[in-house]
Each structure stands twice: as structure tokens, then as C-alpha cells.
Image 1 (cartoon, rainbow, N blue to C red):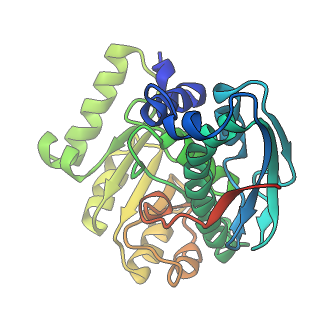
Image 2: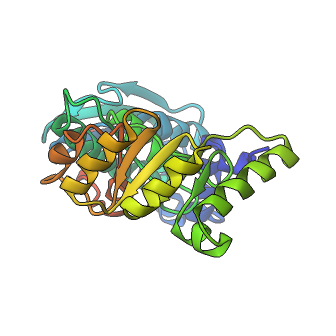
Image 3: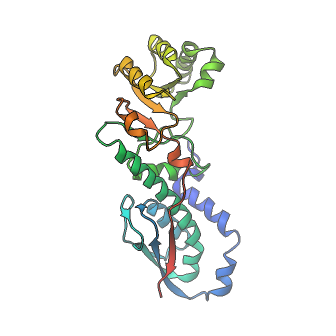
Length: 283
């Protein structure tokens, strides 16, 4: 059973505890308890909106009486000068929620924006852009949601929901056939039903996988474009295929055109600069 602290509500609660501690003393000191106000989320940079569902949860947990009026929706394009939402109610509550709301929105919108760009670059090829486990600890749920909002797909959520045989597993197990055999023995003993993916580093390892079988997807890691094209042709649709390793906006179209089913891009979540936006008081 997944830890409830890692649900959206649980993550927001933990983040608020981290930020608020025993109180927002600046707001408590400067703002009268009964003061009412209104603020708007001002967009300062072009991109794709993401994180509004989480922002609403932050406001709710800080003060259920706050009123949020959404102008944008997750997945909408946004331009500098636009307003994504307004929030009204107790001024102290708005200020206490401000930074956490912005932290989630700025990072998630940046991830959605990068994802949307890469998805647009492979349009028409049939390839699906995937994220990886290269996420910010504890914030994986939010970051992977941002990838979906941007039009990408999610790879496994963690170590628990898919078998992913990587190079170190193969090396420690003593080889590719041994690693696949060990996985099937484990699944039989535990009664688990999990998809199996295996990473290969070259054509020789690919041939070993094809001889042994017993997997659902083959990851072609750091293959050159000619090698990737040959590998996809060799697999011939017998297994799902995934390309990974050093793929950029400049190369992703050519990778997709080799015929791979999936392209995993760790940079979707671990090389991100937050989009610029701010919460401004409406006077």
C-alpha cells in the first residue's frame, strides 16, 4: 500500500509543515487578523500551465474559506501579462500559501512546457515521450503529472510497479539470460504480475534478449541513429521498443523516425528552470 504521505494531499501537507512551522510570523505581525484581500497569479513567461489542481489544494489546506477563481486550466498555453487565477479571502491566509503555490506552479509549468515542446517535435511519428525516475525526491507524483499535462507519458512510477532490468542488474546476475530467468522465478514465487523491460547496450546484448525472450519491452540505450534503426528493424515489432540516453530537442525527431515506440527523456524533470510567475495583490 502506498504511503498516504505521498498522495497529493499528503505532499501538500508535508510541504506546508516545512514552510509554515509554528506560523507565518511576518504576516501575523503585519496583517490584521480580519483583513480581507484578493490576489492574482500573473504570468511572466510563455509556456504551458500546470499545477492548478495542486495550487487549489494548497489554498484549501491553508484556509478552506479562500475562494479560487480559475481563468486558466492545466494544459492551457499562457503568455506574459495574462492572469491564471484570482484568489480572495483572508489576507494572512493568501500570503501564507503564496510561496508554496508558486513553487509548485513554476516547476510543474516548466516541466509541462518542455514536455509539450518535445511532443510537438515527434508529432506524426507514433512515438510516445516518456519521463524517468530522475525526479525531485518526494515530488515525483507532481512532476509526473506535469509530464502528462504536457502531453507526455509516464514510465514506471517507482521500483515497485515494473521490472526494469538495467545494465548493473545484468552484470550482477551474471548475464542477460540469467537475469531474465531470475525475474521469472521471482514473479512466480511472489505471485506478482509486472511488465518486464530490459536495457541493452549493443547489438550483441539485443541478440541475447531475442534468443531468450520473456520480456515486454527492450530499451535501446545510447544507440547511434543507424544502430537504433537497425535494432528496431531486427526486433520487427516482436517487443515494444524504447530509446534512451542523451536525447535532445535537436535529435529527438530523428530518433522517433527510426520507428521506436517510446523515447525516455530524463531531462524532462531533472534539468528544469522554473517558469516566471508571481502572485500579486489586487488593490
